[in-house]
Image (tube, rainbow, N blue to C red; front, side, top):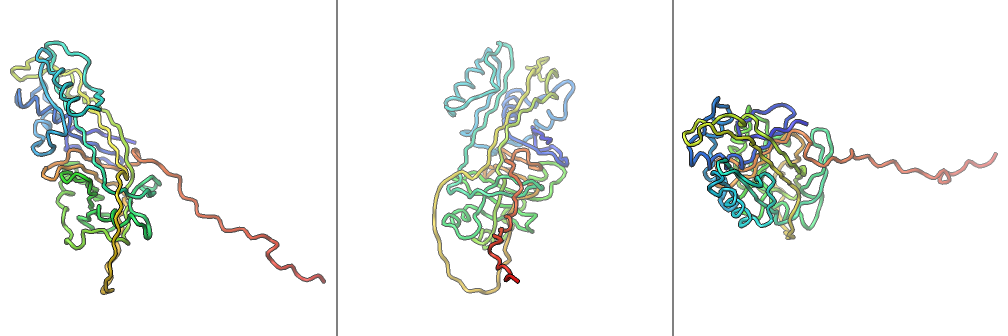
Length: 337
């Protein structure tokens, strides 16, 4: 199943292709820009122009990341390692080189964010694009955890069961976990913008998930590594970097979405019948956009366009229960003639 790692949000959508955008490469690029100005190559690839324009202000908090750029003689490798293990003692960096020549140029970016749902969602299955996969959401029928689970879901927009935008509330108020099952636009960034424009579109009274409404979201687990060949072995033209090249440009992204978290609450309500409100179904069974975004940021620090089941746990198609067999002795025998 095709999967494309995107260095920027300018990546076009393609049928049957999953897209992954994350900010570490842009963080490393920004450190180079801050010191040397917009990077220029000979010849200049489209990706370099796109990275020169990535808006990173307010996208992530400095405590979530480590980034830097410089030459080996300046001790950049040692500084990065020290900051990395100071901020993230359990970090296991796989892309930092073991050593660096004095005149070698290094730029590096690292991001770590662990968002936990205060209350566990229930395990479920869902049919996504015709394939049954493991999912999480709200239990069918009454369950003591359901009120707390419903309280963790905000419905921002609802057109139909095929088109909606919801938010899953994690324990960090600065982060948003957004699920947008919407039609893709021309490029990932345009789809991101279309999803963000739908936030808070519903009236406040319609944003809460009711106890009789359904929620199922596929579990996701991915590890994607890409080498950006279009930036490798091209001479740099910036004054201080004249003639230097990058021999390796890689990005590695690991991501997991599941039901993790723990909390139980209970709630009761009495009301009149009035005019019944149509029941909504938030069942993610078609291609969707997933974003992790800082509340004050213009773009997400992680965006996934999920078109296939490549990152999901497949489940066998449910088999309907067999009809009960009846012991022949149950039937009365005809009287003898």
